[in-house]
Length: 253
Image (cartoon, rainbow, N blue to C red; front, side, top):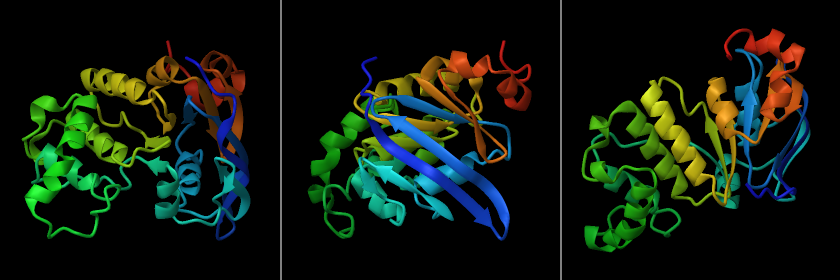
């Protein structure tokens, strides 16, 4: 993989306190453009809090966040999404009784300038069909195009959620535990999907499945007790005795 050495996202000294409890302490995180970067750690390590700060659901108590050289520390989630930093599932609440095609077409309305025009005729909205079908095919859901979302198997539903997120054409995509609750077959399918959609994008993912992390990710940051314990390639961090003690144990062969 050709990787741009330029960071697309920089977090400097981000700290999050909740009524005196320090959930995340002085975290520095640099995500290189064009990479798949994993954020891992044991339960309670602060991964979700970091994710929420990066996507602006939380404002850091201290520290700063830059995206493409712009300070986004004080921005709102919708504002950073418009800049190209999108968290999977934050804008992709699947409508269970609409078809796969309708779900993706609705997600495409915002970038097409139709987001507040729900009364527009189906003929007007059908101009989005070609792009919607391309997205559906990209996530291997072509066979389910006209099926209501509620009838999709779990793994396919997650693929639909990713498709609706991709409708914003993000430069950087943040995936929060994309393999959660999946069986082996679905994990393989979503791993392949993430690898495909990473072309031309940057991905940061929180993931507990270490086999997925070792297979997919260019770089890994390990959190423990709200602080960075290690950072580097999977081989480097997995060999760190502190990481093994804090997180990996015997989970990885």
